[in-house]
Image (cartoon, rainbow, N blue to C red; front, side, top):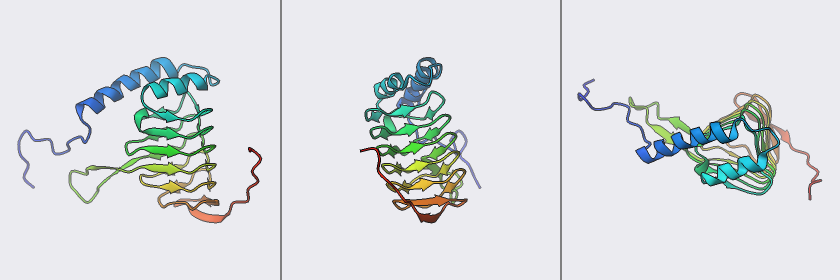
Length: 186
C-alpha cells in the first residue's frame, strides 16, 4: 500500500469551527456545570441551551453526565440524562418526553466504516422515544431508535431498533416481553 508523503491517512471529519466549539464547550462544562450540586438541573439546562441544546421544561441532566456537542442534543419535557451517562452525539440524539437514560449508559452516535483502511467516521442519530427507559450501563450504537415506552434492561447492548412498549435486554438486546404500563403521570 503506497501512501502520499505529508497526506494524513486518517483525516478528521470535523472542521476547525467544530473543534473550537467543542473545546469552548468542554471548558464551560468543567467550570460551570461539573462542580454543581445535583439539584441544580435548571442551571445545567440553561448552560446547555446557551450552547444550542433544545431542551423541554423539567429536563434533568446530572453534573457527571457528558455531552459531546450540546447543539446536537434534543430532550423533551421531563426527560433525564442520569449520572455518568456518556452522550457521544456526533450524529445527534433525541430523547422524548419523560424518557430516562440511567447512570453509566453510553449513547454512541457514530461508528467507523471498518471496510475502509482509513476507517472514516459514520455518524447517525439516536432516538429514544417518549416514556422510554434506558436502564443502567446500557450501550446504544449509532442509528438506533428505542420506541416510545420501551424499556432496555441494565447492561444491555442495543444494535437494532427496539419497538415501542416492549422490554428488551441482553447482548445483543432482544425483546423479552410486552411492557405492561399504567399512566399515572397525566
